Image 1 (spheres, one colour):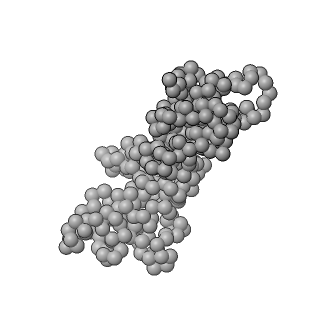
Image 2: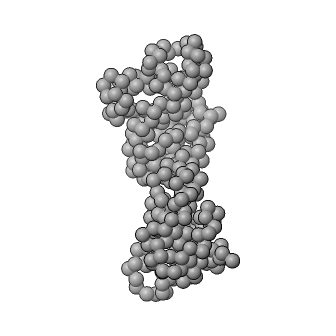
Image 3: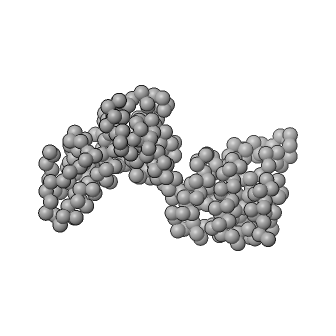
Length: 298
């Protein structure tokens, strides 16, 4: 049993909710997914930041073997401790930077796999302060820790998609930047923005500085591999090809944008390729017939 002052315990949202459910009368609470060692570690970190740095935990105070940090992360996840989430996430990401999934898998302990065999670890639930590269490294390595962490892979990816979608526009996600930033996840990030952020409902019908809707960008991204002209040395084309979406992504993005704003198929460009609808733009850049049919407003 671990005894802790109420003022410190309620910084763990899970414990706070337990206290509220019992009108504050409860004193003993079972925490089945938390062992005493890691609970005391969490509480000591909270106590340290309360006395020295306000609500912030110093990164230097979160040290240990990678496998121990991952176990700490699962406890922070269960207890829901906002004050620790960012620093634990960042520390693990920095430790993983440059590590291959193979090396990360060697760092796991067999007993960790056995202890978590019947559970699913989803952590982290918040990735907003991690960059894209660190998030991808964290997602990859976490899935190699144990079967329990692997079972949480899909949920972690959904957290990442929502996080990435928050700070990107539909125009960026449908165009070159989205493909460059998120690669194979680009289409899913765009769908996440449409699903989770109300501002996207207005964004999908707004033209950017090029006079294009997101749907114009999606149509242009579906261009033929040999556009503008096969065999021609064109630095611009080489630059663009490095930021291409796959045909599967093109299809998902175009369908999602049409579903969100069907009238966008009839909107004409106001600047680049002036007067072109997304369908006409797709025809000019020789996009696949399937994409052109999706963009046909008739």
